[in-house]
Image (cartoon, rainbow, N blue to C red; front, side, top):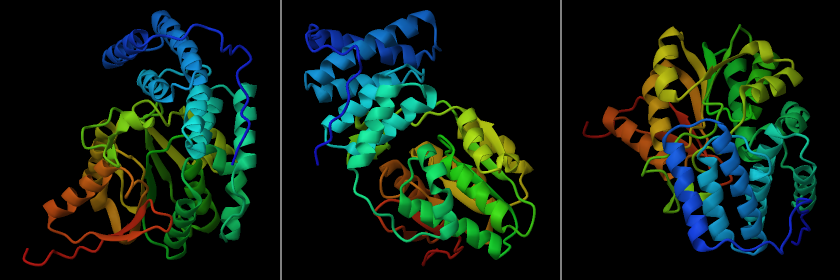
Amino acid sequence: MSTSLPHSPDSSPSRPLPDDAKTAFLIERLLRLAGRGLGASAAVTALLGDVVDTLRILEEAGRLDQAGALAAAAKNLRTATRDLDLVRAKIFAGLGNPLAAKEALKEELRYFPDNEPARAMLAALEAGMPGGIPELDPDLAAILPIIQPYTMVGLPRLASLFYLAKRACQRDIPGDFAECGVAAGGTSALLAYAIKQYSQRPRRLYCFDTFSGMPDPSPQDLHAGQEANATGWGAGTCAAPEASLREVCRRLGVEDLIAPFPGLFKDTLPVVAPTMTGLALLHMDGDWYESTRDILVNLYDLVAADALIQVDDYGYWEGCDQALAEFFAKRQEHMALRRIPGGVGAVLAKSGTKRSGS
């Protein structure tokens, strides 16, 4: 498939190519600033402007691996910067990953909805994607055009999550819903919509996220043996403000059902969990080892016996898999998992069954 992708109006292949030393210097400086937790100061903004210009030159010259490393370092600063995710998208597209390019463009447009080159590239990519939607619940199909721009979760996992939410409501399982890892809010809106449509009792949806992008990964956070930050989806990515969550929920008429809690899971969950009376559904989309561990430690025992848990990243991020395995090994319990069709994600049941010999 060949898709013609628009370039930014100010792109110019005649600009001098940065040498390796400059790129390495920029990466080192970005990571040093990220480690100091600096916000969007004038110096940081100016540096990121220089980084975007450098990224454009590297991408146009075909130095995609180098550009990808620099873009990943820039995302560590968790500072919305015009065209940063647009250039990331071009890098992903050049590396033959149109799905990642599409998600980077959606991230660009969350913060800069007037970025017409990004919108044009997204339209070009979507026009070149294979068509056909698997058979879906009609109620899910009806809201799909609204929620998809606000989520990275693929159709098999969206269909699974909608089924779990509908099941919890129709079986009248007691408790609220919780989502750990909200990003732009698409799956939160899906869950709140299911509550509105099917619940036989009052429920709320707890929404936990930094609302400033992914936290720093740990050494356990690998994909196919590659460190998380090196994949292009490390610290600072998947960012969206709380306003994005509220916007998509407002479009579905469910904003009154959500309760957002900004911050790291390790800070918010220990405070909020004691106020919860129980959970009828838990959606875990924390990606990282520490995030997955924090969710399980704080929320697992609140999940009702006949409720189900969807683990979005199972089978993709190795740290997520490791945290699950360690949690159940420590409890000496069998991990009752069912993989979601499509290769990523799983549904977890609370079996409570002790391992043999324990």
